[in-house]
Length: 104
Image: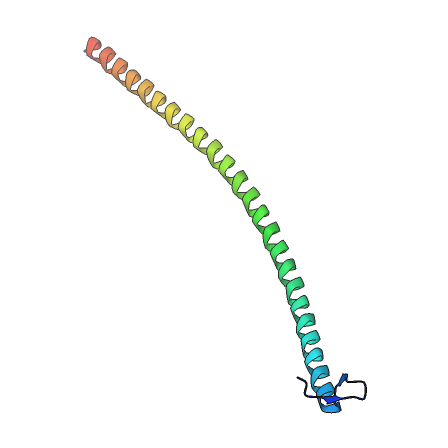
């Protein structure tokens, strides 16, 4: 069944109003496809940018974690040195007190 006119050979012919309607639909679809193509391209570029940014952030995080680890090790060494110095100081104070007691 057709909305057009049947021609002499029995073929369906599209009338002028149908042709304009079909062309308008095709034009709308083409515009939609073009718009979606542009949007897809923009989304792909944005995805690439975000992926690159994620990679940069992961690299920064990795460097920061290594730096934190080194700083923690240095902090532990300094704490150990401080404890050793405190123990040495305590030993010296005890030695001085012992010498004082012997003198008195």
